[in-house]
Amino acid sequence: MKIQLSWQGKKYAANLGEPLAIGIPLRDGGQNPNCYFTGPVRFSPVQAPGFTGSIAQGGTVNHFRLSLAPHGNGTHTECYGHITNSGAVIANQVKKYFSVARLITLTPSAVGKDKVIDARAMQKVVLPPGIKALVVRTLPNEPAKQQYNYSGNNPPYFSDQIIEQWVAHGIEHLVTDLPSVDKENDEGKLLAHKAFWQTNGNLRAEATITELAYIDNQIADGLYLLELQVLPVYLDASPSNPILYSLKPT
Image (tube, rainbow, N blue to C red; front, side):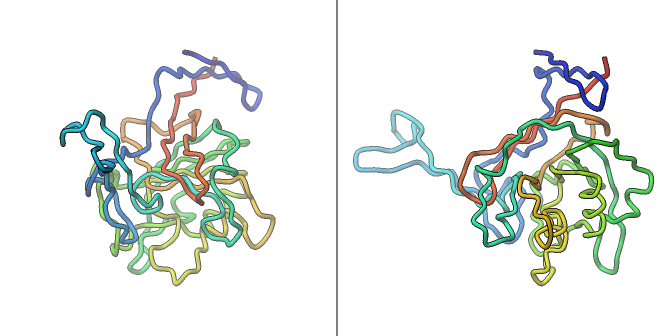
């Protein structure tokens, strides 16, 4: 299925039959990325007297319970309820599922013992005016990211200054392959999260952050249509499956 859309005074075409999934599939056990000492994802058959939810164990159907923590077990999308006592939930805050997005690839810089994506990473990158979604692939980018245990390993993160720059540009949806936009142990400062949602100013209630995505190297930097697929759950975050569709001028 092909669609046409107008954006910034130009016309583009996208083929919805050629999706580029950048969400990491969830698997049972430890074959998922993990951060913040969350523990593994668990799939377990529902058990009741006279019933087992596993055909392999003699049941008539498969009926499994899924146990996970969205922030620590894989690709997830979060709202400002993640860092506030507002009670905001992702089911209420994601109201637009499609956005024109720019995919960029950035390399962290060494800052002491940390690796930080700051203004230096954007020196050769120009964001088009009017862009509302930004997808950030970080280097090095290896398939092992899909199963990496980030807990206790001080992974790269974003400076709050670069987040402020993107907010000023109008970015409302940020997708990254990092486990968090903030430093793993920052003593609760959460500078990048707070800068993105502007919790100390004009709150950006419908803005979202998606973390622990995986953008294959074969997906070139450029302009895409982003579909943000989330579960309508009453939590601050949901497991998610962001999809990219190539945009071509017509």
